[in-house]
Image (cartoon, rainbow, N blue to C red; front, side, top):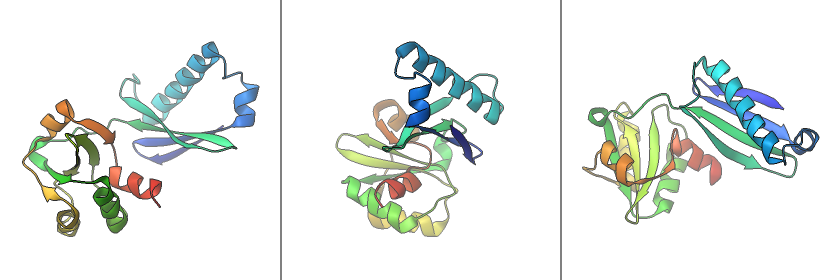
Length: 167
């Protein structure tokens, strides 16, 4: 098992299938213990008292290992300081992700009523916002509305994750 701190808010947890087999994780009671141990370790790394704000996502599954991403919910979008862009097709979001490459601001991807929506922190630089305009349209939807009625597709660094998924 290997734990790597990717950022202040994200941990990558890798376990090989040999280790997986040796620890009897295929049995349900052991799986619960395994998840509890991962959360406990994440709480320790993130220096949290409770693990209620940590999401676990299967990042990669190969013949050799299982890689999980543990993400600490570190910042809620502030409706006054965010911009929402809409895309007719997910391909536009993927193209945007490839064009932007890296981001240093919070961005989430949602789906609602056949459209895709990118929530972008207003602190994004003007160049990034202009690139977003090339691939999507700025909307008047609020972050609160999308979080209530939209379906989250990728949260926490959606553009970088899209770029990684669709290399």
